[in-house]
Image (cartoon, rainbow, N blue to C red; front, side, top):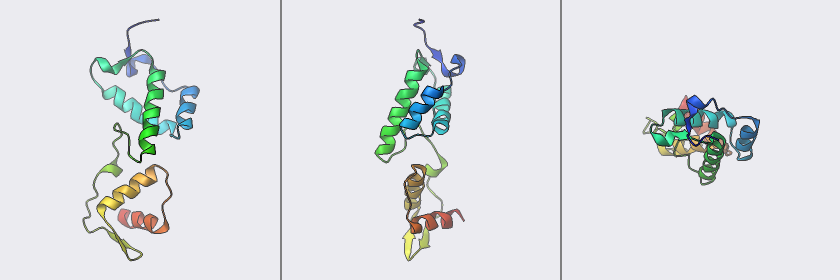
Length: 130
């Protein structure tokens, strides 16, 4: 076995059925996680971007994502448009309640974590998105 690691893009590694099943068992979408994983490790520079065992790295990535999502926060490696501050400072009014820009961010995150939205929350997102 080689003691020299390889970068992801040079390794030829992609998630096999076993790796995809592990992500699913962690409550994650394997395609979504693969996209984040691939972007992160392809962009990372330096010696830490080379790994001996990409499957083990994948499992650790999935475990960290699972733990972060269980705490209700997105992974430190994820960046999504929904995490950016909406530009409408007025918010939207739904069912006699005003949803602020910060609440809309929270609803987007809740939706991305596949947590149920109540009807007013769903209408607020729809109203915000036009």
